Image 1 (spheres, rainbow, N blue to C red):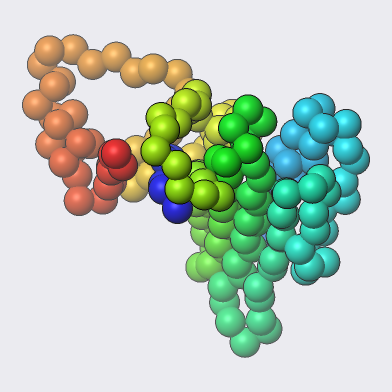
Image 2 (cartoon, rainbow, N blue to C red; image 1 turned 135 degrees about the vertical axis):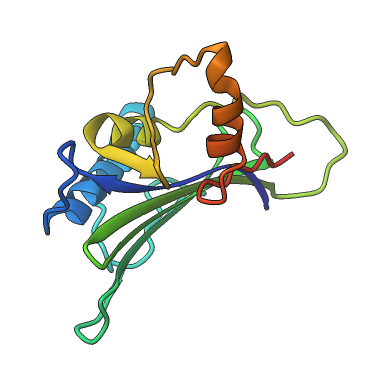
Length: 182
């Protein structure tokens, strides 16, 4: 499996608060993302529920939503695994993994997008990669941060005098890790 896209960030309300319902609100956005995809692209209505086991809404598609929490643990962990074949190249499979973790009054989200092939072929792979719609939805609906950096859909401007600080405090910050997977 080849990792193409990965992001992890903390989620709060716009005012910085973390109500007890925040993780479930984030989960609602994840469920909406998947159910809307199936309704609009496949014409299939699905009911995605946690701990209902793996489902296959369409041939070759696999979905599983698992919530892991315990009264003795302060951590609540929800994971969505979703894999399906590419619409044009039946040899290519997409896999999305969304994790929502709630602990110490914080909510964090991670998203990973990978692809794999069902058989080994020597041929170029063609696909268009964009930021997943779910990530944009979360950035719009909540205050999302990575370390000290507020994430935004809007581009930021820096002046020439700010370049050195940006490199030191953002690109080379030990609190924020950027990776490029080739």
